[in-house]
Amino acid sequence: MDILVKAIHFEATEKLQEFIQKKVNKLDKFCDNIRKVEVSLKVVKPETAMNKQASLTVSLPGDELYAEKICDTFEEAIDDSLAALEKQLGKYKEKQAKS
Image 1: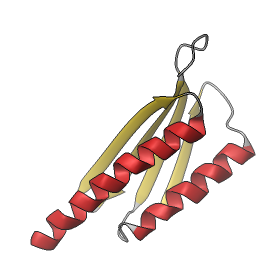
Image 2: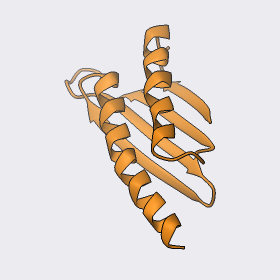
Image 3: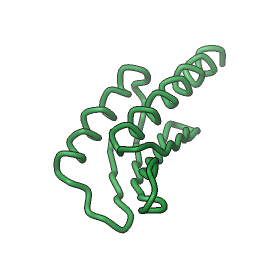
Image 4: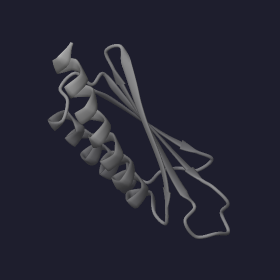
């Protein structure tokens, strides 16, 4: 599984990138045929709270799953996005099992 991290208009710290790698790798537990995960990080409206946006796109054979969350920290946004993707992966696996 390839993990691509894009920080838009800022430099993501080594610590943040390691956090993302560690968390995203856990998606393998839910689905073993994930090809690629793209993570986009962006600061929206820098002067406000709840301004860290994380968008995750999971590429699967014949399908793509997407989740986006805005929180106080990137870590929180990543966690929330991954929780949403875990649910989507569960539905994806059910759909695959039926076909």
